[in-house]
Image 1 (cartoon, rainbow, N blue to C red):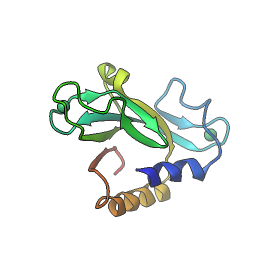
Image 2 (tube, helix red, strand yellow):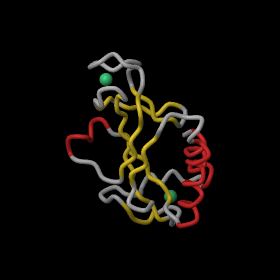
Image 3 (cartoon, rainbow, N blue to C red):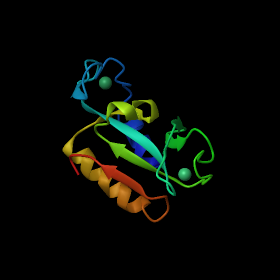
Image 4 (cartoon, rainbow, N blue to C red):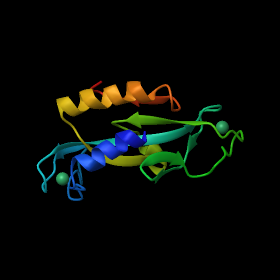
Length: 127
Ligand SMILES: [Zn+2]
Ligand SMILES: [Zn+2]
């Protein structure tokens, strides 16, 4: 996960602060990049409960160490390009630059990382 986030943050120095205010995708008024909003939801691996998420040094992690429902420490991160209204309090959103070359590179990174890290489910419309 860390490499994925570093990639996005290093690729451009623009934080896209003024982009995607009322929309889920569009161009950044500051740097012209095409952006898409993605949501990350942290769930318990054992009971599937949604857990409050935070970003810690570029990683999406659960706010609490243990699941309040089953006591498990294991979790996985779901990446979604749309979420329902009830999921908003749990979700972390990012604005990511979308370009065909970048998407190829990102999926390559995920394959490389898969052996070392926890399973991450990427559910985007583009991949
Ligand atoms: Zn920008
Ligand atoms: Zn649980």
